Image 1: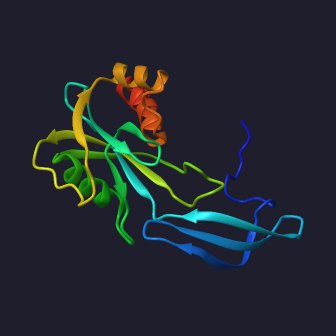
Image 2: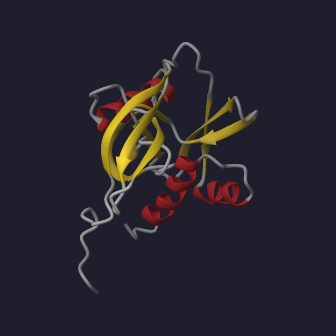
Length: 188
């Protein structure tokens, strides 16, 4: 197998300047002028977001703590792993621990970073840090003011079936479900 440097390339684009095209409460839109690899210039627009954490809460018996909530604008019930936005400057593990407790009331004895994903890499700078949480202990949830969700327990086979049947379409939960399958089979 040949060695390849995944981060250095003659195809890299370089920012010349940029402006904030939209500044909202939850996200911004950045518009940058860049130099292309061939020396020409182009404009790139992308959504700026501080990123988020995703938690795969795994009970000792192999079942998984899940959330169900209604999400506008898609007008559907979302089945998903607990997750939340990273506060500016916040350590991602600290954020994961905080979000699990706030949303579900649970704390975990052990934490493991699973992976980092960019769900719309050409259109957003948002990154999602996925963590596995084990050794769960129940407590009291403290949802955000405008947050409404319920928790329930599912099995890995149920999650895989729901992904296959289109009942789980949330990108972070689909990816986490496939990672969890490898984790439970001790293939990672």
